[in-house]
Length: 354
Ligand SMILES: *Cc1c(COP(=O)(O)O)cnc(C)c1O
Image (cartoon, rainbow, N blue to C red; front, side, top):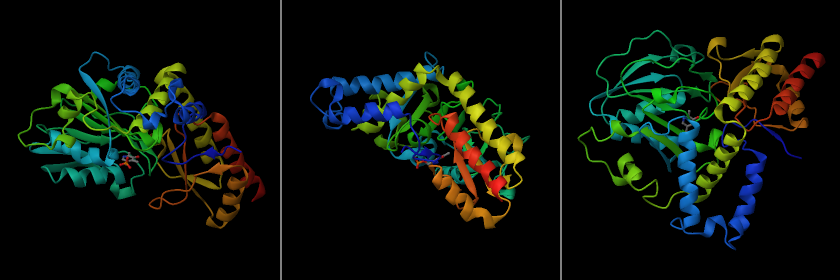
């Protein structure tokens, strides 16, 4: 039986994508060859890469606006350093909203001065800092749109004329934003757009070429752009599955349709968290993530019972990250409202039982 998969990442993808991808492993497009045994220089794969790149820009509303989309390797973790390598000349500002922001800050410090201009560390990152001042003359300002571990999400992004860099690993393509406010967006595919193994980078070309240092080819955005994201062998299968997921997303109505569904799912679980006395939400209400709902049990003694009930209902992956404890329900684009309703029913059953 297919489980209700609330895993934080790698995570759920549409069932029809799994079906199509598994067929392509056996025989891609009736070619007599598997998708994973063909040359990345073959027309079949070049077409896939081009479609993935153009779908990304199209869905984000960034076509014809000076942006390029790349599908690279090394995870979002490589983007922590690659962004700084390519953009940090003297100093950059970072908003510290959790573990991933912290890791981005650590890498950037290798390349220049890093100003932590706001942080929510004082409360174990259960909120998004607001009302901070943005210093002038920064090379860029970095933020994390959705904090996968803590379950907070930026609703209003900082406004300034400094290039905005954003780690959108766990909420890319999940909600409507004016994506042209960002100069660089990166996202590991394995949360909301594909399998692990590729990282999408969307970059405004005119911010590049402004620093003095030499950049190794593999870490140079301009090299990857000039080679159409095919400087070296790309992660063929991960790009293919991401492309299928983007096709699926477009067919369903694009980001607008996803946002509507994601808001419904989030509302469903948060209203249970708020109404059910056995559960406490972790993130402050106004900053709650529509992607990752974090909550704890009011009475830890109920843990075993609740875990067993979840298991019996076919619920997978709701254990919280060790730095928060409790539970985390990740509800990415491919998750149905029925799966969220199943979890909510179990939470309600626990209350009736306890
Ligand atoms: C998972 C995650 C990362 C790390 O991604 P990798 O691809 O494992 O390097 C970075 N940022 C955020 C917000 C994440 O959720």
